[in-house]
Amino acid sequence: MTRSICDKCQFVACDCICMHLQQIINQTHVVVLQHSSEVNNAKNTVRLARLMYRNLTVLIGENSNDFLYLKQLPLATTALLYPGTDSFLLDGDISDIKLTHLIVLDGTWKKANKLFFTIDILKQLRQVSFQQLPENRYHLRKANRSDSLSSLEAIAYALSCTEGLSMAPAYSALDAMMENQFKYMPAEVRARYKSE
Ligand SMILES: [Zn+2]
Image 1 (cartoon, rainbow, N blue to C red):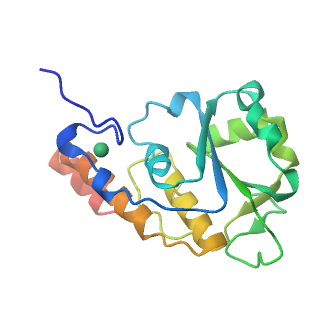
Image 2 (cartoon, protein in one colour; image 1 turned 90 degrees about the horizontal axis):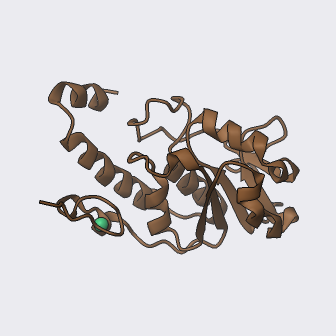
């Protein structure tokens, strides 16, 4: 018997979380760069972000040629969410920065770094980061550093800083996704996650 899969959220039909995915109209266009190896990762949160935020584009690839789209973006008002010594802090004073596009590197730090160093145009962009990260609610990806956020949380937090959008819809979506993943974990493994 084949299990039917929801063609939106990609979970099996009985686990569909679409009812937890709220539509959000964001003004800043979010461009997520995703390493090819992340595309089929069930724990990746970008597919949720894609279903929620109206102005969001996902570009998939491994090298500069895969991301030529970035060349069309206005340099002056595009920022890259990536920590650096000269980063502007989105949750600090950003009143003098007007952003039209925000680029987010998806995946573990290792993969995000790899994208940063292979895509030349990224180095010409203003870098932005956060002063104080909200607590990481999404602990399923052990490869993430404890002080990093899932892509969906990072996007939600960035837009809460720049546009005052609530983070609640992102948390509802993550909670629903986590519940699905907990469901299929052995009890002792689940206990370990829940206690973190
Ligand atoms: Zn669904």
